[in-house]
Length: 346
Image (tube, rainbow, N blue to C red):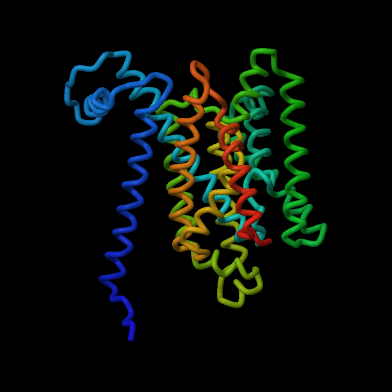
């Protein structure tokens, strides 16, 4: 006879899994800091980190110190925050709309955030009253509202949501291109188009203080509603019958998704496939229960985007490839494999 685990054993098991996840994340961050365009020995990296974290006073070349602390560390941390945030957004959207193809990119949220950020940057929308992140949030919220309204008018089914998302994505991508063609000069247009493909080159420490808190806040908001997400997987009527405050939970979770997506897009541009592929990969590893799926997806998304950033810096010597290109090159075959093996079900 199998005895149920005691509370102490359950707590120890959860703590062990959490420590293992933190160890994996730290290893990925250190890898992202060590590897890059310029090869640096581990001893130099450790000395630079010790000098800034603990004031160790170890001898390090000022150029190497700047590369490590002012460039690679914030870049890697933002990549981790963006990867976790986009993966969480995918998990939530797939549960809420009950469609395995749902993600911020496919449902138009990412395209709307891009449009809002570009409108603020180039068109001067808001007259300086809102920043790029605020513009991205408003654009993402507008896009999701439009997609949801169109899907409801078409019938409200999961397939209608995806089709409406495709239409919304095309609309907001067209608006973004129009804004660039109308108001940007050649240099601005080139920079923005590179940014829209996903670019971490301009990330610095102030961006870390925005990306990480938003990712952490989104993580705990999703984890707090893990059981509600389990119920939503069977439909909103089933969730309501189980005592879930459907409308309130939907507003909170959609707000969290919009905030995470808008923040990440405003910092690094539009990065596809993270919110689509990572939730399926995590679901394959830990199962569909959101209490496990949410931490696994956040960790996998962070590690995946750190790895993609490392590849983007090293793929072509002397040139940084947009990170969105790398995620698509990896994500498209990965999703095709999941689809062929029957892991995706609408």
